[in-house]
Each structure stands twice: as structure tokens, then as C-alpha cells.
Length: 380
Ligand SMILES: *Cc1c(COP(=O)(O)O)cnc(C)c1O
Image (cartoon, rainbow, N blue to C red; front, side):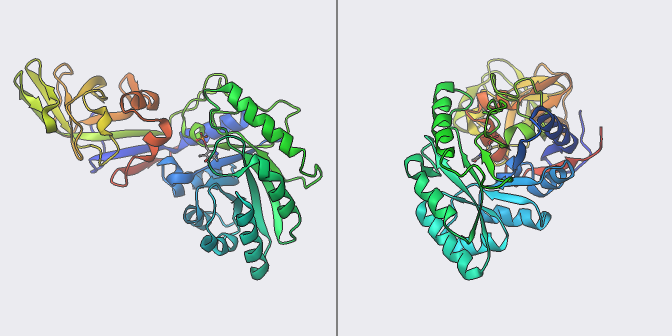
């Protein structure tokens, strides 16, 4: 890839057929009774919510999770019927809107339960809720020792349809013992819920990292899938370890200037790098204003002509300088790949994260608005 067909300087390409394939593979690997909850918060992890949700609906996904009412409202415009789970606590002044939109509201405390019941009564609607239990994450959710009181409140209200219960693991990909402890607390609490509550009641705990729990005797009947549907591989030891999802997103920018500089020249702000040899450098029109963090300064790699070009000096807001001394002919308009494949090489999100002190979720979410999203929707 030496030229791209459009005019923008920095863009991400979203491979929608790859999203289809990933969803298909995940669904196929899950036991039949497990419901797939597609997590599309933060603009579908930077991929663009409308396009991603439309595609997921076509792929047969009918349950979504988002962080807040504003995100849910956008999603509701795309799908009037889908189940939409709000993952974060809902503020008192947001409850009426959440009820209007028919969202599945997460209850994290007795007070929140009271507020939802009052609002539902006065609007004469039935609130759909999930109770979230904090089993050791120390973040949202009702602390497990108080969970039974919330269960009782929810069961006792005729204005509530109790749709599910869930928890979240803090270390699903790295600390098995802690996850087992969290899971045990959660399983014990499930004993307190009437087993005949209703057939569509959802019990879920796992995100992409923690999908190993689906033995036939497990009570779980749903999973919340974020990262993996966007093509990040499951962690070692997880239920879906053998899956090889295809990366959905790649990130590119154009070279805007190429020049020779003598040994000893300092590069960029603060002169954090001095050239050790006579060099040819390329200025690429991408920087931290687009999602290349300054942590990548003097460490990161872009692909140009399919070859690895080290970043020189500090990443600026709009420009990054890379060493192209050894990569043959390079000219303005050529494409630098920051994430994804070029020629026979590829920068994976995992690699990008190593040199940018980041984590995959963050790397995807911090691609800024300025970076144009270009969608590929051809069937392959
Ligand atoms: C974001 C989120 C997920 C999705 O996690 P991934 O690791 O991206 O699969 C699942 N559950 C909750 C509560 C979340 O906030």
C-alpha cells in the first residue's frame, strides 16, 4: 500500500466483514444457551457505534451494553427493539430518560433501586433492571455483603421487571485465584435468587478475558463481549483461547515530507533524540492529537513500504518523525501504518501498547475524532 484513495491525512480503516467473522466464531464457540451481549460503549471502542451496531444487528446480535444514557440514546435510534444494558450507575436525573428509552438499568445500591422504583411508579411503566454485585472489583455494583437487601427490594416491587444479575472480574486475564474467589462469592449469592424467576433472566460475569466458565453445570447464561469482537485475541487459558479473531481496525497516516538530515541533528521538541548517522527522515501527519501517545517517542514503529521505521524524537500533536534511511524510495503521499498490516509485516495492538505504555482498550478508545473512520463493507 503506497497510496490511498482518499484525501484525509490520518484515518482508521474499519473492516466490517472482519467484525462479522469474529462474531460468528465467538457465537459458534459458545454453548447454544449462552446469550451474546455485545459491548459497544465508547463509540464501539473507537470503531464508530452506528456502523458497528448496524453490522452486529445484521450478524444476529440483539443485546448490547453501553456505559451511559447518552450512548444508549444513540443506540436506540439505530435499533428500536434491541435490549440495551446500561453498565454504569444511573444518576437520579437520568432515570426518567432511561425508562423512556426502555433500557435495562443496572442497580448498584439500595438508593438507586428506590429511585428507579419511584420513577417507574410515577411514569406507570415497568423498569427493566439488572443488579450488579461487587465481588471484589471495588468499583460499581452493590458490595456483595449488601446484595441480598437489594435483591429483596427488587423482588418486592411490582414496578420492576428483574432481568438479570451480574458481576465483573478485576483480573480475569491475569489472576485465576482471585477470579475463582470472586466467582465463588457470586455463585453463593445466586442461591438467594428464586430459581424459577423467569426463563429469560440473565446471569453473567464474564468479559472477553474470562470466558472459561461455561461448563454444563454453570448457571451463567450470558457473556459480555467487547475487545474480542473487535479482533483482539483471547488471553491464554480462557475458554476461547483457540479463537483467532481478525483485527477489525487499522490506523494509517500519510507521509507529508521526506528529507535528508546530517548526523548530529536533533529531532523535535526538547531534542530528546540526536541522529547518530546521516539520515533520511519522513514526517508523518499524525501525532498525539490523533492517538499516537507521547510515550511512543523514540520507541514506537511505523510501517512504510512494508518496513519498520523507528520513531525519532518526541511525538508532536500533529506530526511524528520516523527514520526511513533504510527503506528505499519514500515520498509525500505514501502511507505509514501505525496499527495493522502493511506488506508482509503487521503492528499488532499488543505491540503498539508495549511501546506506548497503554492497554488495548485504551489504545482503541484514544483514537481521536480528527481521525477519519473509513468503512470497508465488502463481503470477502
Ligand atoms: C467494558 C466492559 C466489558 C467488556 O470487556 P472486554 O474486556 O472489552 O470484553 C464487560 N463488562 C463490563 C461491566 C464492562 O464495563
